[in-house]
Amino acid sequence: MDYRRLGASGFQVPMLSFGTGTFGGEGEFFQAWGSTDVADARRLVDICIDAGVTMFDTADMYSGGAAEEILGEALKDHPRDSVIISTKASFRVGDGANDIGSSRYHLIQAVEKALRRLQTDYIDLFQLHGFDALTPVEEVLSTLDQLVREGKIRYTGVSNFSGWHLMKSLAAADRHGYPRYVANQTYYSLVGRDYEHELLPLGLDQGLGAVVWSPLGWGRLTGKIRRGQPLPVQSRLHATAFAGPPLQDEYVYKVVDALDAIAGETGKSVPQVALNWLLQRPTVSSVIIGARNEEQLRQNLGAVGWDLTAEQVRRLDEASARPKPYPYWHQLGYTDRNPLPV
Image 1 (cartoon, rainbow, N blue to C red):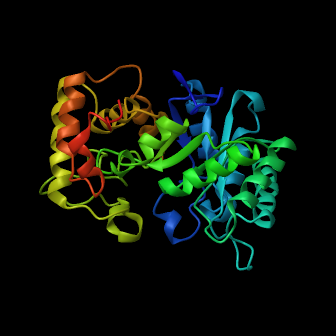
Image 2: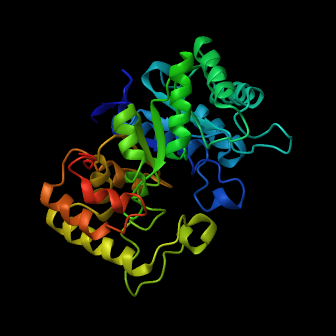
Image 3: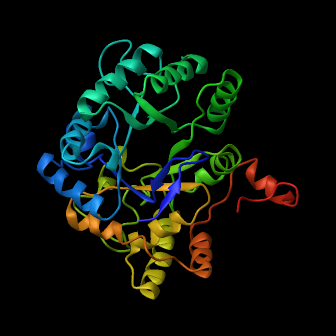
């Protein structure tokens, strides 16, 4: 497993990391993802570590904290410095007025609870799960600075921020000397390329590494979604709440057709090709893979150790291209002064 720098930091992370959204399965939303218990989690974690996937991503709101607890149990027999733990907070985790957001009160409480659930005394990468417009960015950043100085977190990042959210935060960090965000955990896939409009150029310019979630487009690129075939029984696409942004069926089929053709040329599977395409995109530090079982995990691990050709990448780019929103379509008219990311 190759490692890459996490943004502009000196921290190295594996190209693939493992997401624990399937751990626990508590509540309707997470039951649709999976219900991995401690025993199965240990097996999946062991397979990951054997393959060099040493980074594990979770969040306090996954199954009401159960995912963090299960991950802590699954990792406790491994030396702490042999694994990278990434977690997130800011979404609602209780009924209290302060059980949400990125206030000093909530972030300190969230980190303390995560440390207990994960059975560790530090978090390698702590990310804000979403932007909190009601808390001043200076309060957020000073709290994270305090937690870094106390040794409870080592690197900081964000998830689901817009470009201006990120730049406002980075400017405040520079102004006050607080640690800069180095990771942007972002939705990105062959059927979800909005990241490329603003967040990718921002990542290149400001030194943020993309940690990609849902790289298979909410299950659309597993190879099981094809023309004339019913959805798989376990697909989260049966419930629109778990399906991500809506997409026209014909667009998805067009992308899958291109993936199918290249899978045939390379001897790889559709999801392996889709994941490999992501690993060749600018700014991508790590792609989060998930799995309900060992078979799915081993399938996803086959996305590394080889590369698509430039011609194959071009064909996938063309098949998945969509009209750009303003002002990005307008900027294509003067790429001599506003070049596209490379």
